[in-house]
Amino acid sequence: LTESEKENFVQQVCDRRGVSRELAIRDVSDSVIFGALLLSEGFVHAAVSGSVATTGEVLRAGLRFVGPQPGIKAVSSCFLMVPGPSFARPLTFADCAVIPNPTPAQLCDIAIASAATHAALVGDAPKVAFLSFSTKGSAQHADVTKVLEAVELLRERDVDFDFEGELQLDAAIVPSVAAKKAPGG
Image (cartoon, rainbow, N blue to C red; front, top):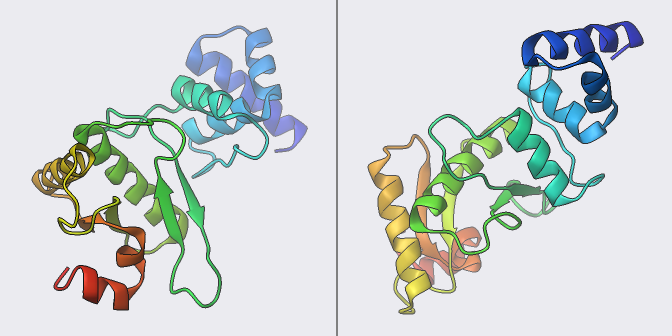
């Protein structure tokens, strides 16, 4: 933004949020908060902040100014990996920073939010795999049960993207491994 545009933006922040000019200038001078404000006001479609701030700083700015997607209760994070030319497509991994031991409902919300983020950033239709140390019942454990419950909850939400679970990473991304470990999946 030019200085004039930034000045107008500060005024918009004051008017829309009912904050003092001093507070608005302080917020706009913080790059993480400024990014969250630009996102919340519709000036940008996404903000990348993890390289210049701690996870906590990014989360606080996001919660304060953006909030979760409508219909989503669990705030989560994801990251995009572009493996290279030998791999078919970018991968989005979630939640690796916010909820260390999510409930089935939180896993469901994380899947929905991450799928939306993937679609917005990459432009591809997302396909979600609920990753686990088990593939299609290869292990019995409370954590596997949690993943299976999340898959059922997601099925009940009638989402508009493909998903599958529980899968180990290799079965999720390597077709020949999927054919062995999760045939018909």
